[in-house]
Length: 320
Image 1 (cartoon, rainbow, N blue to C red):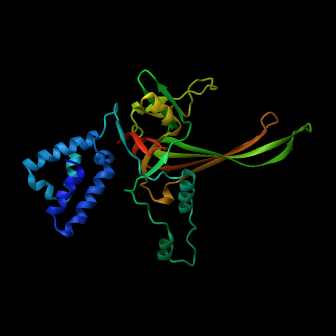
Image 2: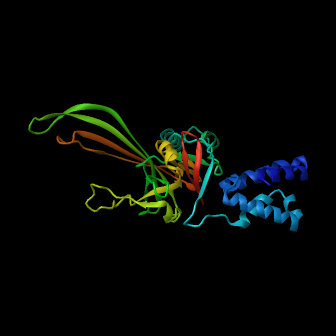
Image 3: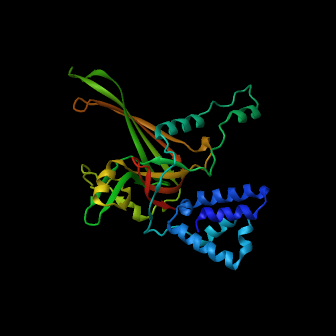
């Protein structure tokens, strides 16, 4: 029996005025446990077995609108640190444009202060509405992405994103954008002239309060070739996910693989945006003027997804 059939039984058991409540609980359960609705996943299989057993031992249980959430909670499906599910289902979620999303978020944080001729009610009415804390947003983690293929084990491994857990938060760099903005002529004290290229470098990060959030299974050591200390003081790990793929399928999939993170934003705009910037000065030997900007938003991690952007398939998933 599939989950959809179980839901159909519910519709027959409840009056019309209770259907909405049941559907809301169903949606909440699937948001909390994304693999609950994936046919063939470990959680989906356990759930259906538990459901079939429960209707025999306690048939009144499924007459309650929140039965699906309660049953999923009882199964305690949070994965162990050493496992994640390989799946092969369509990935239908919208992947946000990182730069646009962060810029929009920043604009909602930096609203015009209350005017002296503005009432408190008028001021609050024009403030951006708080983002739905239950909505999941998906971002591709393209920062420092690289992949490798083990032909003996036929496993493809993708690394992406830089992880820093040295401070209060666990930080993940998800994207860097370098934009050339122009150039200008400069000279040193001896009159030597050079054309300086001007570049804006934007780094986008997500911040998570739970520093033990991502199991060691999904962290790979990150080593900078030009770093004399061998291991970076700032980015000591990268995210990593792998999936078993036959060689020919792996070759076709390799250029299109991506790690996508699903997150929820739980803070109000004015308390939740981090912005920092500085400019690195050019030299005659290195005529680049880089303006560095770091953006960060605190969030709650819901899932990591390994997807093929070309076929729109989700190949592996890890959920909290």
